[in-house]
Amino acid sequence: MKKILLMAAILILVPATALAQTPCGTRIDILSHLRAKFKEIPTAVSITNTGILIELFESNKTTGWTIVTTYPSTQMSCVVFAGNHWKKLNTDWIPFNERNL
Image 1: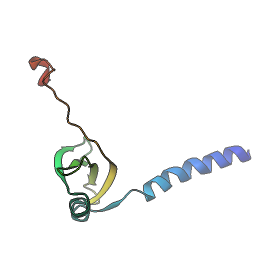
Image 2 (image 1 turned 60 degrees about the vertical axis):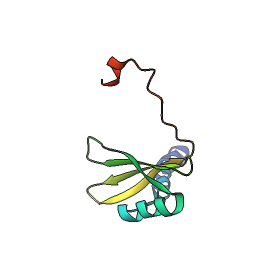
Image 3 (image 1 turned 180 degrees about the horizontal axis):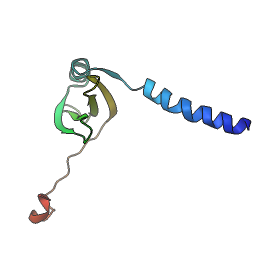
């Protein structure tokens, strides 16, 4: 029984810890930080089926990239992924009739 309670406590605490470490703030603050510190600018954008704004930021000076989500209900933006060595795929190899699927 103690093992089950311990496992339940871990399952409850791990997601809370992970969320606490996610950098969030106003969209303006997040964008300003990405531009000033990492020289990243938005290069792609999309909206999910639930209305969440997803943005990809890339740097022209480095291979750094960041993915940010903005939630319309709270107007808060969060950095969800970041890394280096983002590469755009060359799509020339895809047959023309399959590019616009």
